[in-house]
Amino acid sequence: MALASYNVCMSFSWTPHRFAGGALALDVANSVILRFDPARSVDRFAEEEQMDAFAKATIAFSAERALFGELSPVPPENRVPFLTLREAIDHYFRARVLGDDGHGLLADLLEATAAILRRAEKGALEAATAHSALRLLADEEITRLKICGNCGWLFIDRSKNRSRTWCDMTVCGNRAKASRHYRRKKKEAKP
Image (tube, rainbow, N blue to C red; front, side, top):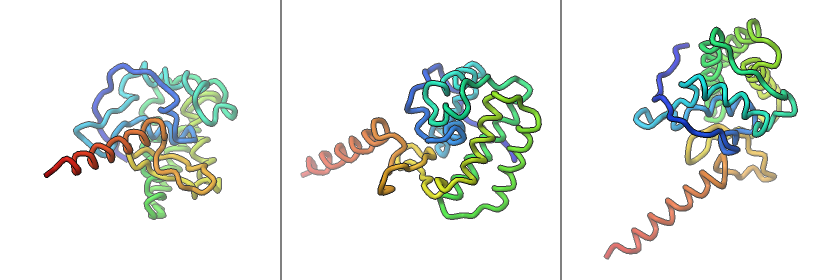
């Protein structure tokens, strides 16, 4: 599987919004901002220090922090396989949400997971990400996966009635509502 190319990110902070996926594997996949807009997509892991900072931020913000605890950063020799895993996670789970059973994509995900688990140390971000992806495959929560209607991130809808539309109401939900409001007001202002 070839790795996609994305724009390099500028410095920023890891915040709770960046962990809106509900599973570490999804948060890793969501490290590419605006994945399907080549002109605006940004890879938050393009800079090694941001990938290292992500590993540290998981203890504060990841929904699975109790499972994995504090995670060590991805060592240089595991970064390419880790990014391959990230892309396999995104491709497979995104296809699942869109109704494709993705047998070939599942094989890619399992191969990338196996490659990481053969080389990563316990307590490393890449090992925890592989375990998170495997847990999600086996968990009934896989039926609750959605794609954010605003940013395109993958997330688990844990609402009672499965009605969430956005990965994070305070960011994407507010942006979508503000955009609708702006369009409505603009339409009303036209003579």
